[in-house]
Image (cartoon, rainbow, N blue to C red; front, side, top):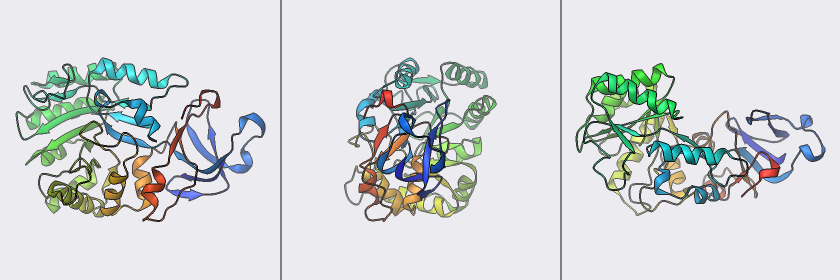
Length: 335
């Protein structure tokens, strides 16, 4: 129980959060909260655990990320065995790590991005040539615990052709796994959309997206924001301006955006990124919209704002930066 609860897109009072035996959290009328040790009381506001849906755990300290207010992360490309190990550690009682959902390796064309980058450790990518390769790669990632598939479409080097990209998407969808595409450069967003991808790992930034393509994207896929990777807070970065404009028009067309930072890519704060939040607001999201972009409807984690949630657009980002992660089981609380 708290003074207020933000859940389901709005701030409410007279509501408590019930943690079910399976770990899922849901709001219930405060009258249904039991007394005694089964109920914990907090000042301020409770809300679903805040999620960063674009992180590379090999390049950051996840304990610092959780301490910085992020309850859950999506790892979008890493060495499968290492990421699976971190995810298992995060599930342990009393873990100081955020919950980890992961995609396993980048699926790439032979010699494609990011195999040509020094930051990508060996084993963090898998090359795809044929449709059979696509099916095998998806099956292997799924068997290793991946609940997402990550594909790259990078115009600066070898790329998967549309048939191979579509084969990856088809294999993933047959296994009920969504596909996230790193689309960078001319033609890559159109290719991802045509192949049936579910998400873009980044808001497009290399060029303005044509209105007609943007309308189709808004109907078919979600975009992960990653706006602050352009300039990391420096003023007047032209790539950031293109990205924010693309995202603004995507949102106006009815598109859905998720908060993600590409954490590990340059000097980004290891935790809640106030600059990313403010850029999302500049693209047209209200504070409630930002919170929707940062949370899951079926959360199994809880975030807490000790001083309460302030939805004033000017103060919102700084307020959210004070969030702490609560463990649903009081015996295992770490903050």
